[in-house]
Image 1 (tube, each protein chain N blue to C red):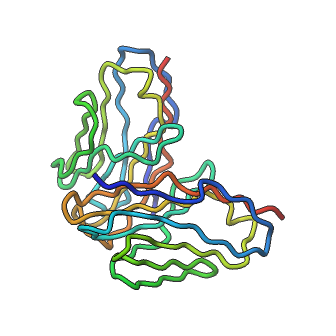
Image 2 (image 1 turned 135 degrees about the vertical axis):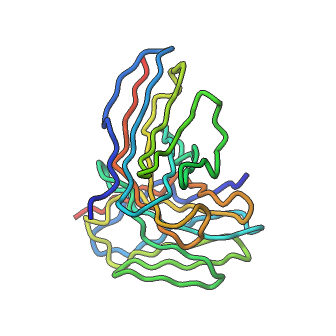
Length: 112
Length: 116
C-alpha cells in the first residue's frame, strides 16, 4: 500500500511571497503523480499529471517538478495571490494497483 | 460541458440505516471513481467503475458497494451506517479506462453525509 506524505500541513504567506510544498511517495513501482488544488466549497481541480523522472510542468505562476528515483515532487507558487489560497493535494499511482493514493494535503493561506 | 454532479449534496442519517449516493459524470466520460474524506484524512479511494464493471477497489468493508449504469451514471451504497461513516463522499470521472496514468480526473462537489 502506498503512503503519500505532504509537507508542510499548512502554510501562511503574504501576498507576493513565493512558496513551495513537498509530496513524498514510494519510488518503487511508480506510475504517475497528480497535483490538485481544492478551494473551500469547491471541487478539487486538476493542476498537473506527471509521469517521467525529471518532468517539469508549469501553469501560470504554478510549477511542479518530479523525481521518481527518490520519490518526491515539489509544487512551486511564484508571487502568491489571495486567490491561490486552497488545499493542494498530491496523489500517486503505482503500476500494481493503478488507483490514486492521496496525501493529506498542504493548506495554503495567502494574506493580502 | 456540464461538470460532474452529485446528489444529494447533504444527507443526515442515523446509525443502522442505509444510504445511496448518486454521481453523474461529465458527458462522454466512462470511468467513475469514488472517494471518502474524513476529518484529518486524505481522500481515501473506495472503488472505480468502467463500462458498468468495478475495475478497482479500495480497503473498505463490504458495507460499501457501488454500481454503474449503461449511461455511466454511478451510485454508491452504504448499508448499516456507523458513526464513522460521516464524511464527504466525492466522485470523479475520467474519459479513459482505469489506470491510465495521464488521464485527469474531474471531481464533483461531493455529498456531505452525517450519521447520528
